[in-house]
Length: 324
Image (cartoon, rainbow, N blue to C red; front, side, top):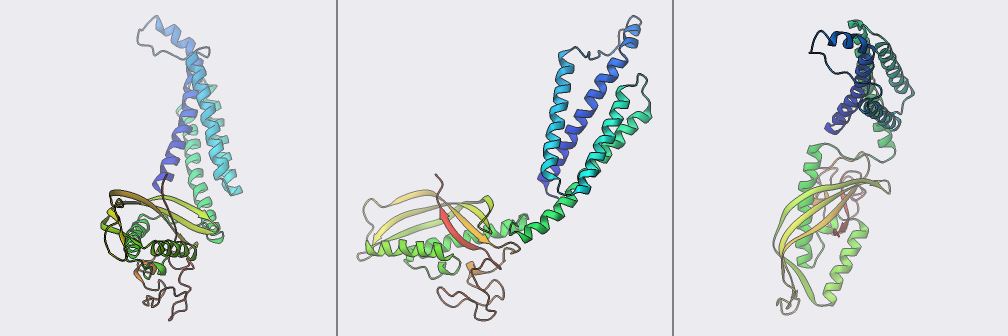
């Protein structure tokens, strides 16, 4: 269970407790109001009670209703199993029934609070059952519908490390005016775009260079399922001295030099069920068997016949974009 899920459950439990205990206190205070008034002449230590006609009471009731609606809305989106649904509803009914009994009594007993507490405990258990049921259901459906997104921190750390390597390799290849190493881990569409850019630079007789290239920051910005592929968008903030050189004279073209940071967003795609390989296309080896890839734009591994850029065994760089 992720930390975000734990926080959500904790918030919902607090909302439930708030929506149950505060109205209980209000009604119990009203039922015991007369005895408090009679005792107030004998002691000055009586605790102020909430009147049904007061604004405080109306606000508490309003907040309780809103809290209940929020819980119902969240449950509506979460409940995928009829049994979990019945469990949650029965827990709510028991808790509400216990609360009503508590509201209508003037003299409260320990058993009344125990009944209400057991109802709240049932709600907590029903939430746990609900998440276990929907978690296993959604997990199987994610594999069947190509919607599995990596979630472990170690997997993200590995992907960021490899994405950094891909970024540096790509910039170095552009500086060389070649795409031999980049071609291995880029999709057909992106490779075609890069080839057009390189051909354009050659036609205009200049070369784009990156000196003192380094990555200052790299983070995962977005995860999405698009076109039956799991896409992970990684923002890379790089720093370099960028300039153009004449391909014939090798001199820096006047006015082309710029130093500082620049940002690119790399999109890595893969199929559902594919884990981020520790070593693969970016390192120039087959992610399935580890055989070195020999060739510029080879499609299948010579040893295991794996389709290299299918996204089945490793991520593939599919697009490069720039933030607005």
